Length: 94
Image 1: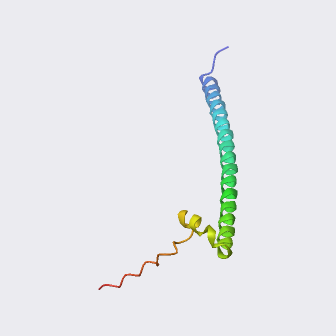
Image 2 (image 1 turned 135 degrees about the vertical axis):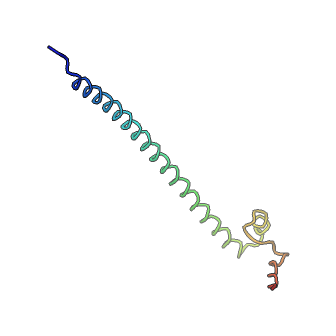
Image 3 (image 1 turned 90 degrees about the vertical axis):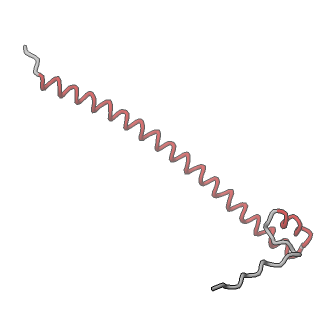
């Protein structure tokens, strides 16, 4: 029985196709896992940011009735210093 060159070529193409499919499948699974982990991390970061924003708003409201906390807010640049005026706007020049 003679060996047909077309059969050998098709088997070679099939083997390369199977190997590439395995590589792409593995790559897809790993990238999907990485994206899922990144999304979970991003959700945690956003939750902490929202909590910090809520805390800052609560502290700002608290400072309206308890001015003793103002030096701390001024030190963290959450509130402008009480002794300084806002910078004046520059006059327009032609």
